[in-house]
Length: 158
Image (cartoon, rainbow, N blue to C red; front, side):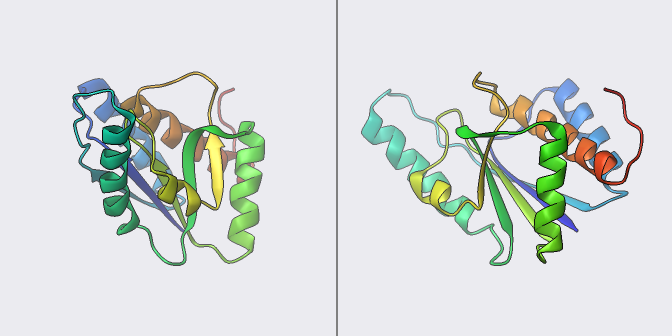
């Protein structure tokens, strides 16, 4: 199984890099993990038109990294909230349908373009709260790891 995480922006903070590396190491037992960073287009104005243009440019770069047979999961505040068990069951269900690559997409601080959202097989939200996209990468990896532990009936702290 392949887990691809396409994320706009890079990680600068050492504590986040360390946490991300730890969960990637743990997940390697179950799946191959690939992190793909897309440069964030800096927007100095709060103009809706300028933000949409930047999202479109980021979206084009994201689109080029999505495999044709990937199950695409976009992280969106408007997405569906799942428990960890429901998330694990969803991944297992899609795996049973023949999907072997799961691509998660984390947008920039302005979100994702409507085109990328339309390519999504599943829109996922972790909370109605807003999290920094750098931190979201760590949270997502922890939940992916937890989903493997659940699917394999292996103990993991609650």
